[in-house]
Every structure is written in C-alpha cells, then in structure tokens.
Image (cartoon, rainbow, N blue to C red; front, side, top):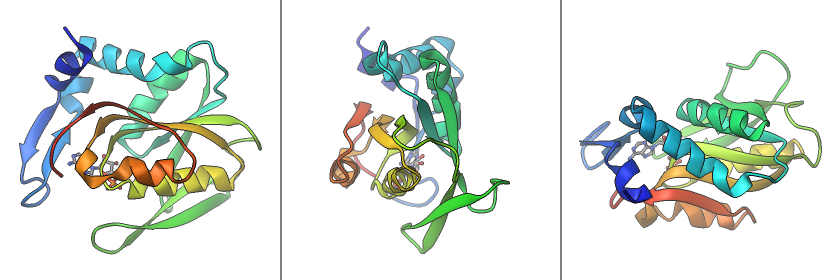
Length: 179
Ligand code: AMP
C-alpha cells in the first residue's frame, strides 16, 4: 500500500472539534496502530539516515511522542519545547500568536550547543505559528535547524511558507484539505 493510503487511513478525523469548522486530525489512532506508527517514524527518519543529526526537538505534546522515537532511531538527543512554566532550569522563551490571544513556548537555554544540527518534529502544521516560534527559539539558542518535519500538512493555511521563509526546509508525509 502507498505511504499516503497506509498512513492516512490510520488518522481519525473529528469534525467540529475543538470548535465548529475545524476538522481535528487525531493521531492517537496512528500511534495505537503498531504498523502505522512504525511506518510514520521510518518515513520521518528516512531523509536523515546516515547524516549527522545532533538533536531532535519536539513540540509539546504530540511532538514528544514522535520526536522521541525519531531521536532514538537517529541516535540523536531529544530537546523538549514546552509550554511556559514547565521546564525547571534556565529557559529562553518566545511569545507567539494563536487564533485568540498569545502563548509562550520555552526551551532550556543549554539544550543545544552552538551550531548543533537539529530537526524539529510535530504532528501537524496548520498556520505554522507554533512551528515558527519553535524554529526561532532553537535558532536563538544557537541551533542549526536543518529541517522541520510533520506527519500532516494543511496546505490551505500555508504554514510551510512561514517556515521556509526562515530558511528552514519543510517535510510533511501527507496533506489534508481544510482547517
Ligand atoms: P499552527 O500553529 O496553526 O500551525 O497549529 C499547529 C499546532 O496545533 C500543532 O501542534 C497541532 O497539533 C495543532 N493543530 C492545529 N490544527 C489542528 C487540526 N486541524 N487537527 C489537529 N491538530 C491541530
């Protein structure tokens, strides 16, 4: 079966969640399907096999699950990017806009060494606001962000363009229509 068919079928779509007009793309069904989970991780890892990746950075919370597995496969370290107030040591933070209001994302200031090659992982890119904040944060602490990788792209929202504008290539495994 093609990658797209195989993986797409493992993702559950929930209309009007968390609010009317949004179709929530739920990856818990992918994570719970051993074959699909393994396939998704293999596909995220594939471009980097045999290259030097120092760290994988994952965005809380679904990016932790995917990013942890990718880091293990690449023999790389893992860096959690967390919501404000969760990390215990000295942090660097960045504010970013959500649809309503703003949020803050943090990383430990010593989580990467200057120049380390880092890939960013999350489950889904929508408007790209979250991933843009993540890239800026990683760059601020000296990371060389070599790519941002997602299982799902919602291309209508043009999030990938925001990340490419920061000079960071984007890789996604599949696309869904809508928001
Ligand atoms: P954005 O900052 O707009 O790119 O939103 C990306 C973040 O919100 C990711 O961490 C996603 O997990 C989550 N997200 C946004 N839209 C959806 C959706 N339709 N289904 C599932 N998760 C979503």
